[in-house]
Image 1: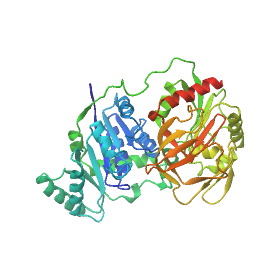
Image 2: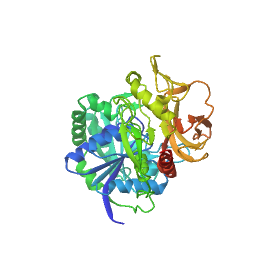
Image 3: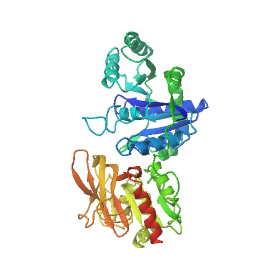
Image 4: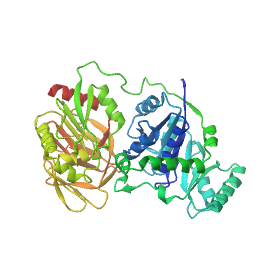
Length: 465
């Protein structure tokens, strides 16, 4: 195996400890030092990878030890790292948190160990002094197989607070009890990233705020000043680039290509980069369009892919674009394949009720409506099986992915649900609708869990032509 880039995993003591702020600042700081930096995100997340791309200038890829078979995960990692100097993987939740409490499946720690990467762990040091060293001791010894390079304290209140933290870590490190404290990031409320009901604001909305590049520069300055980047870089090993032969499809199929329209704007931006790659390899030319801004669908499409996003926040604009809604409705009635996930499913329904109780017309291609609730409706990994033959393959086709939504389907139970979803606790529920050549539901699929689905969708587009 040939030498690859240096690499590090940014893990956290828990959610909200500052992983994303540290990661974005580190990506931008390394980039302005002249490094080619390749970002990744652990777990099923759509928002952080978009933010990574803004900071690093490269597409960020999701890596998930439960959704993706190991060869596929390794292939994604290796392909993205081919021309990079440094790989930075942002973890999810706490570093040991995953699919359940009994084992490490789906955790950032498991991902780091499988890829042979060291981890840097950030924790919230507010209202802690010497106790922070005890917390570090627990994380260091919880899993002896995980290599921890060191720790970064976030929300440090003052220079005196930082000095106490360094004293505590130095005392323990000198007795070879814990890795070193490599940084103290001062509390900066003005650097906090804006959030809403599904997490942080998307890259598109952050960029629209007008000060996003300046915010990334400020985060880079914050990391440069608070973290010993030279010591971190010196500690990073150069990893081996794994072979790509068993990493799933890597060459296009020899068949006529199809035009697959993919919704892409502020309302529909939750999609995996690997899904688009697999669809392209299967023979699809990706044709982006905007349900918000375009007057109609692009010409000569053979199929539609409507990914998730925030239609509930742009419902008024989507409703106002009656020409696009009519175009989508007519396409759905034409018999050509349509795959819609979560926000895309909501768009295909008759109506959407937003968080203020206002009702907006949607495409009306499927019966029922989506209604926003005040709490998370569904959250977690899902093992899916299709319940009817359709664009994704025969009935019983397996897929892995997740659900994360606040809205719920409001209407009579669909005559033809699209998926049977099995949650981590074994609970099985039906999701979505399968009507004609439309398959739609709240389920977000990662196609690397079953690349045959990408081939089936493209073949369905080809047949419909």
